[in-house]
Image (cartoon, rainbow, N blue to C red; front, side):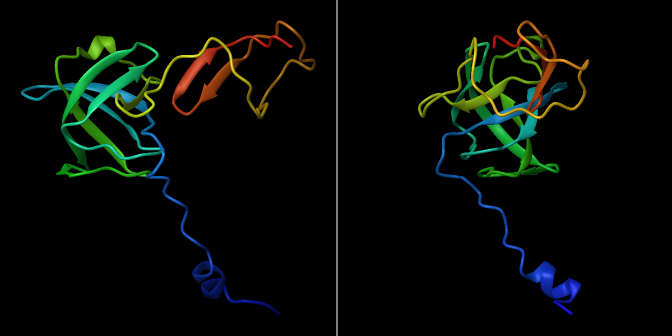
Length: 151
């Protein structure tokens, strides 16, 4: 005895959309579209992305203006957490940006690269013993990069 599947699904609360936090948008990919220009693509994790905003990409520290924001070929006045968007940026080459970079609002706690950080990790596959100097590949949002365990 218990709830029906429909009752259980109806009881699920929608995820919180942290629009009040600073913008963080990890890049999934970057395209060069003829007649438009450079279009980074990714999912808004926190904050809000709007046309006209000045964004900074970490860790490259590139700052530029957002010309337009689109989701599924429709122009948006704003993108919120959970939205998968493409956004056109001014005067930035597709070669300057790459998957794993993070876009943020240049005027509100812009993202910065970090030499080290503390993290809660999930180890999916390992050689049997993990110790100082172990160098796995780190997957963090869209970044896929070698790292090193210091302790």
